[in-house]
Amino acid sequence: MALLEVEMSLYEAILARRSVRSYTTQKLEKGAVSSLLEAAIRAPTAMHGEPWAFVIIQDQQLLKKISDQVKPMLLTMMHHNQHQQALKLFELPINQDFNIFYDAGTLILICGNTKINFSEADCWLATENLILAACAMGLGSCIIGCALPVLNLAEVKTKLGIPHEFTVVAPIVVGYPNDMPAPTSRKHPRILSSIPTGRVN
Image (cartoon, rainbow, N blue to C red; front, side, top):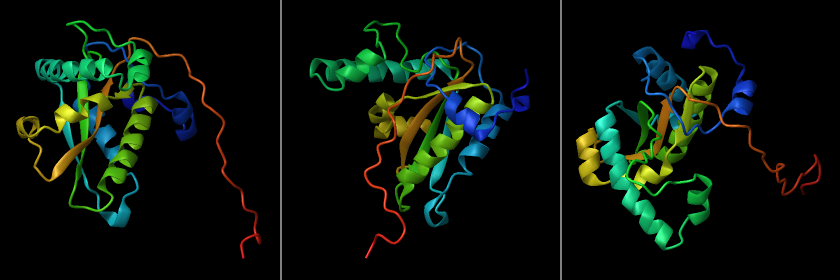
């Protein structure tokens, strides 16, 4: 099945999107990456700032090195009872072979220019566009937020070619799922107030 032949409405993609944590070893083709980035940059942007920039990593050895840097930090968090519930939810294995990127072949970093107003908000909007586009193309994706402290270390940014005025906002693995997770429930929308026309003085 060719990626660009997948047809899915926007609403279908919103309902179908899952955080995928099991991937085949197949890497994304250049055309698929280009399509994802094109979707990302179509996100709303405050005052046309377009603060985003991207890093594409498909080197498995580099991904493993980054994963190995992140894991000790996660263990420290667990020992201090920080985010323990989330780590349990993700069934984080405490072993040498565990890869925080779930063995996906591609990691996309969405970086924001800190000199531009609202850059972080804009980058998260771009992230949503990208992961919905990935779903519509038959791909899996997952935001790996626990990698941010390591990815934003000065020496790591230098290695990845990220200028000092940029910060990594959203690390996203994208790839071909081994299987799709079952749907999860969501709470009903919490409406704090609903003000009908003519009620505000």
